[in-house]
Image 1 (cartoon, rainbow, N blue to C red):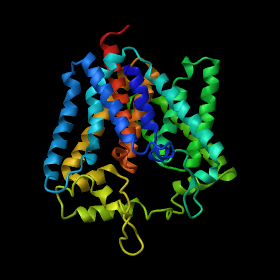
Image 2 (cartoon, rainbow, N blue to C red):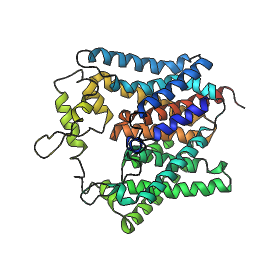
Image 3 (tube, rainbow, N blue to C red):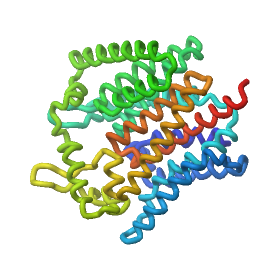
Image 4 (cartoon, rainbow, N blue to C red):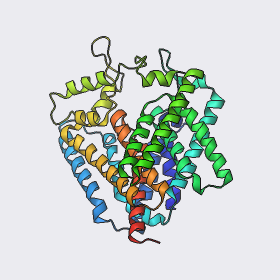
Length: 395
């Protein structure tokens, strides 16, 4: 039952708001995700009720910080929807019982299968609907939005590409053919989406690999080789197919549908200047609910696309502390997995998950995409617990 619930949770985490709308599931997306999530948590806690004190320390600190935020929020209007940032905290808390209930689980292969289905389904959607139907952008920049959420879509494609490589050695001939297909389809989807954050994810992942590996020389050579291959593919794509990604990477044509992160961040920090303890959780969402207001007749106030800024604006130093503790916990878990887990695929997956969380926090609205964030935090927690058990009880 736990495995079924975990797979359902992964599928719901991949489902964007636009996809839910196309499937007439708009009103059901949140309650169904919460139901499956709470069923998984309740079932695993009932089967394995013991929480490891070491693993509960970080969630306890995060819960305390959220409690402080809630107390400060009582001065204004409290919307329970804005406390969805508790979902990743719960993921940290239940990762141990979930891992114990699941028992031996090849998580990299399981996630690869789910992500391969996602990539192939997204590719089929582009073929059926046509690129023009899914295109967005302006000023000559065309981005193919195959899922309705370019950021989450890019994250899924990067994970699919990475896991295809990480699990290559344990696949038979048919599995390797499928992995080549996923590489090809996922790579094309990533290039066509023309979003920059996935490339930051790869750069951070490479840095984490070099930081945690004992064979830095070998990995540095591999990273440089992969970067050269990637640059060559990007060059071919730019010259032969479309230059949108290159234009966005070089900041050519920034007036796509926003006036940029820098303007938005400056605007939000200026608004928060008179609110040292924050303007209240949900301020950014509520302000932009009816459209993006004009700042000076030309620039507009957009999402800050930076979680540190958003949580500082909404919850002040306590909100920033919440984000830093959460990210530090994930990075520490990934480092432990990378150093002690016996499975190379699990080590690589942990670093990729941590890199994704860090990159999306820096350049996107990570905790606003809470379903995606929650499942990724849970997956990293499962790897951390699994690695700890294997280290304490080697086969």
